Amino acid sequence: MFAAVYAMTFIATPSLGAGWFWDIGNGIGFAAFGGLLFLTVSSGRPLNVRSHQRTGYILLFIAMAHAFWFLLGDAALSQYLKPGAPGYMWLGLFSLALLAAMITVALPTDRQRLYPDHSKFHYWHRLMAKSTIAAATYHILASGFYLNNGYQKALFAGLALFALIGRPALTRLFHPAATSPFSVLLLCIVMTLLFAAARNAPL
Image: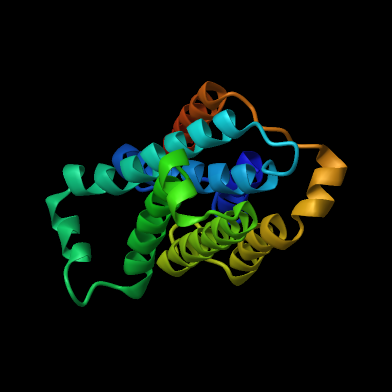
């Protein structure tokens, strides 16, 4: 999932970069998105709940790092938090807020209070996960960074859609299992640095 997400950005303009600051910030965002797809695909039964939760915390931290990276590094980008900002930016913030809410209501105390029936929790948790990925997908595609061509966008959207509705098939083919949260964090860091390095390597 991580490799596929990053590969989509290199299909048309592999050497196009905007400097280390910008590329690292967007690399963090792609890492968070790849992690969300992985967490969705690997959430079948039997489920290691503790690993699933901790990986979710890490992905929330990475998604927040993506947002705050730009706000703290470039004050001019605060304009995207004001009325009149592009819709795709608001959807990016919405996906971040939805991810935080999804993790919060999944905590044992809140889950038992809000969802006495586990099947209802499972339904709403999955619906929130799909909504988070859908909003994040639109945020990425509409921004147009690194995905400038129509076929790139179609492939990227297809990957997200397949991860959502094709999860049973992916599970049968690849038998994905929840890995250690530390491994996910390390992979996000490595992929982000490789993404930025490839974009800024001298030709």
